[in-house]
Amino acid sequence: MAKSNPNSTVVRRHFDGSPEVRPKAISGREKPHDILTERFPAYVGRQERTAYELMRRSILSDCAVFLTLSGAMTPAGLHQSCLIPLIERGLVDCLTTTGANLYHDAHRVIGHRIKEIDPTAGDLQYRLARIIRIYDLGFWEETLLETDRLFSAILRGPEFQKRMTTPELHFLLGKRMAGIERALGVKEPSLLATAYRRGVPIFVGAVQDGSIFLNMVKLKQLLGSEFKLEIDVSEDVFEMGAMQHYCFATLKKKMAVWILGGGVPKNYTLQGEPLLDQILGVPTQGFDIDVQFCVDPVDNGALSSCPAGEGHTWGKVSAESVATGSVYVHADVTAVFPWVTYCLLSDPKVRRRTLRLLDARADAVDGLRREVEKRRDELLTTIAYPLVDEATRHPSVRGRGRKP
Image (cartoon, rainbow, N blue to C red; front, side, top):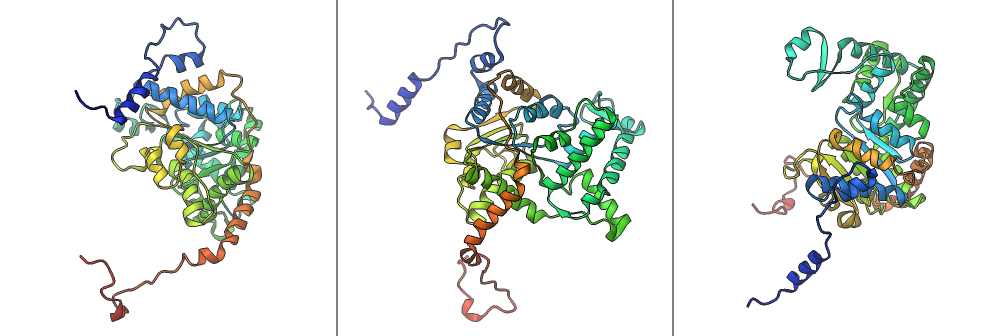
């Protein structure tokens, strides 16, 4: 008879205490919460259930919620069906997305339509017909041209003629869009206008990789020194770190990150923690809850798909997140997130006031600057390194490197 292994005893005890997979038959009379928590016991369904439970925990424990949105999600209407309702309910405190998502959102405001099309109909034919395709979505090329004119006209406004960060840029754009929507009688507001009204800052990590910025390039070339709008990338990154530091150090909140897709929005948000701890020397522990919906495989080294455990090694999420507060849902965002949103919003207890971090931008930045200044002498020791090149290297330096 084989000897008992202490580890196997622990595993057996854990197994004996695990929930049994025996879901009840669906009758059609269940509440959304009951369906998701009781009828999704395995595989990607269980990942989705866990995501819902963690997102619900984020709100009930009053975490500061940072949401990231990549991909072509506003053309697909995900902001209208899910994101704007979540913001209106006070469930999202800070948003990181792409310039493309904000640009394409404006099409509908000025009367253009995005339609369902056949993705197999032939791109050569679509091009001849001047129809732009995003997989199974399509719109007229004129939609882009008129949206370019819209943003060019807005960006020429006097309030834009200065150096600024992306949250300030999108605050000003949101204010303008809200005014346009009122004037036109638009019933379904844009993401920019909604975030402006609710005090939700919008960061765009690769701002130059989007058509709003492309129109800034055009304006700079045409107007020269008359056009003074510039994006301060360094200050933008600092501001993201400041927002996170403000949440946990000033507001004393735990932090949750809800990641829709991957890409730049994911890393731009998560890198605020290594910026604080490893670069600026300001102690932090990382995000406490990490929920991601993404179709990418996790084993190819791509940042879009790296799980919380891998992120923990970089200081991006906390040990608590890795242990009990993380899930990676291997699914297309558009296939599962509307259902999760429905389950959240169907519960009247899942509601709160947003933190209005947009209003706290100056205080957050000033607070982090003070923390950096406290560490100035120590940080100055981190910016020097004994640089050597082949032309000036002293003989005494030879041989100090690793042997081949």
